[in-house]
Each structure stands twice: as C-alpha cells, then as structure tokens.
Image (cartoon, rainbow over the protein chains, first blue to last red):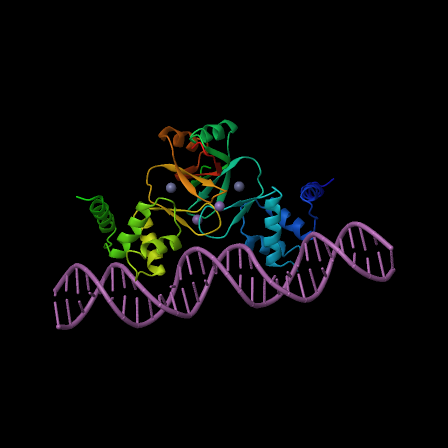
Length: 142
Length: 142
DNA sequence: AATAAGTTTAGAATAGTTCTAAATCTTACT
DNA sequence: AGTAAGATTTAGAACTATTCTAAACTTATT
Ligand SMILES: [Mn+2]
Ligand SMILES: [Mn+2]
Ligand SMILES: [Zn+2]
Ligand SMILES: [Zn+2]
C-alpha cells in the first residue's frame, strides 16, 4: 500500500469522525501540506495544488484548510501580520522564523519542557495550548 | 514631577535617540497604551485617544504605533488572525489569551526559563527573541 | 520671514480573508 | 434508474485591517 493511500485513508477517517466527506480537493490540499512542510500560505497552497487539480478555486483552498484545522490534522500558524500559514506537524513543536529569509522551521520540543513552561502560569490560568515562536537568523553550520 | 511628565520625557528621549520629534499625537497614543494595558488594537487606541485629541486620524494612530514599536517602547503582538495588538510592557513576558473572553494577560517569565527554552535550539539557529503564547481559559480563583 | 524637514491628515488603494448564492456532486431512498 | 436532500465547490462580491499618496500643517534652521 502506497504512502499516498495511507494518508488518504487517515484523512478520510478523520473527516468521517467529524461527519465530513473526503473530496479530491481536500486530498490535494492536505497532500500539498504534507509534501512540502514549509508552512505555506493559502495562496501558496493554491498555486501548488493547481498542478494536480487545475479547476480548484482559492475559496475552496481556504475552505479545505479550515476543514483540516477543524479536524485537528493541521495547525494554523500566525506569528506576524500577514497571511496565515499552515503546518501539518502535529507533534509538540516550536517555530523558528528566520527574519532574513522569511522561512519557518519546526523545532521539536522535549516533553518535560512544556511542563516547565506551563508552571509559570499563576493559579486560575488554565492553558490548553502553548505556542512558542523564536525569531532570529540561521547560520551555515545548521 | 508628575508621572505624566516622566513618561513624556522618557518618550521624548527615546524618540530623539532615533532622530524623531515628540508630538501631541505620539504622546496621547503612548499614554493610552500605558493607561490601560489590555493590548488594544489600533482601532481601540484610536477610540480612546479621540477623547484627548479629537482631531487625530486613524492613519496617525497607525503611524504613531509603528513609531513606538521602532523606538522599542512598545511591542506589536500577533497571535491570531485579526488586528495587531500593542503592548507597552518591555519586561520579558508571555501572553495568556483567554479564548472565552478574548482578553489577553501578561505573564511574567523568570529569567532562567528563557535560557532553558533557548537551549532547545539546535546549533545554527540563533534566536534574538522568543514569543510565548498560552491559550486557554481563566477561572474565578485568579 | 523664507526654507527645509518632519509630521499629520483624509481618502484611495491594497492584501488577505470571508461571505453569498448558484452550480455541481454525492448519498439515500423509491 | 430516477429523484430528493444534503454536502461541497465555485466565482465573484464584500469586508477588514493596513498601507499608500499627496496635500496641509508644524517645527526647526538660516
Ligand atoms: Mn517575517
Ligand atoms: Mn481570540
Ligand atoms: Zn510547524
Ligand atoms: Zn503584553
């Protein structure tokens, strides 16, 4: 069984769990995110999926992305003014934004650190999620 | 000497340091941020300063906020799609966003924690700043 | 006072996103 | 298979937040 089929089944299952159908549009949008995990904008996703499904509309790309976010298959990322970016990495991770190139990288977070971070919250603050964004530059040795 | 005068002088100094002048518009905008530290949007700042300076324009509010950010007197905060919010708290702090009420609170960060967080960065990643956003709800006991 | 530079202003323009309503597709039922 | 109901897609209009433009105003310098 191909990896495409696996993703497709996982997608169908998650959609079904929310009472939604799988569609060619939802598939190509999700596949676009999985193929290049560079946190593309809706416009960038639109440009990429048009290769596979030339008739898809930008509105549909927005609809599909929103659907994937609702199904917890994708995270919407906003760390600066400008278009929302989309990330299919569901593991706990931070984002590193390179201010020089504009690119964004995933940084894995050790499980214990999230606990330590949540410990700074005074009583009465109950956090469901923590977003961590580093800003800076990356150097050659990486 | 009043606290207003103090803020005003600090503002003038910081502006001068960047080769900029102080103006009534820049003063009221900065004062609005200091007076209610609830991370207002440009529109909200505009509504508040109109009491003091009824002739100010929205474009000027945007200009002044941008100027204050450039002078490192104010931080622009973006953690979700929607208007940029502004924060005059220069101490290292995280933001807690209450998803139910929409309000945002400052959470002080112990100095050592920032170090621990930056330690997760692999070699080659050089972070100037770290933004931390908690999302959740606040309860009565706070 | 004249000039230059910095600042403010109203309104036009732009970017990103959401809305609307019609068309198309899928599913369930006869 | 034929039909109705519901879900989804689509193009384009509408909307929101922000930036741009160019003229008016203010302040500092000669
Ligand atoms: Mn950037
Ligand atoms: Mn919110
Ligand atoms: Zn990511
Ligand atoms: Zn703050």
